[in-house]
Image (cartoon, rainbow, N blue to C red; front, side, top):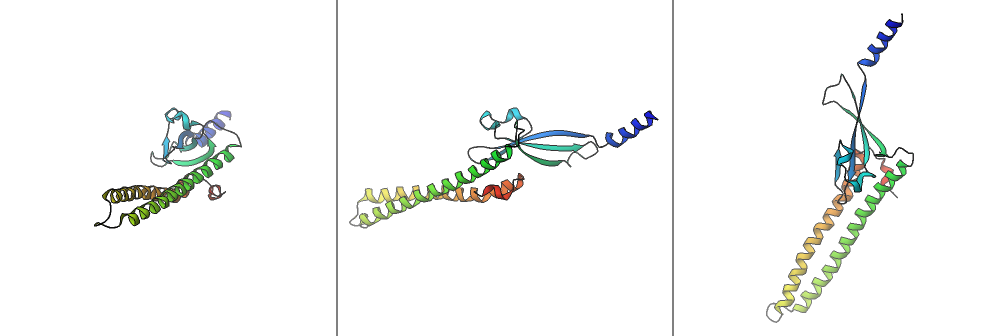
Length: 176
């Protein structure tokens, strides 16, 4: 009777035996999200903040059909305080993006004012000084570069909520 019970139990669990595999996700200083299956490949500077993602796979599933669940604890941290640390990290990421946008917009305004002052003092092609016009052209080029920074910061602010959603982060975490 015991042999039959063991065989029955093996039949029930043997086919559905779960294998746990982990992925590690981190975001670098530029806001780029990285994922690896080896914790040692996570740069040391990001290891404490890396998120540990769980991949559960049953033996009878096809290779391409893996179920992924996000663990909200950073890799190597198994405490309940991990949620608050993750929340703080996502909020800090939003604050940083907003600050980059504000700084770039302020810089653009300063450059616009400087360019306008130069163009007013230039006086035109007949009576104006060439070096003043050249300076205005240089400021305009700098304005184009700063506009790219503004656009990139705006794009980042649009991308962060999508990245958070894909990572399974509650939407409320991004608000302060």
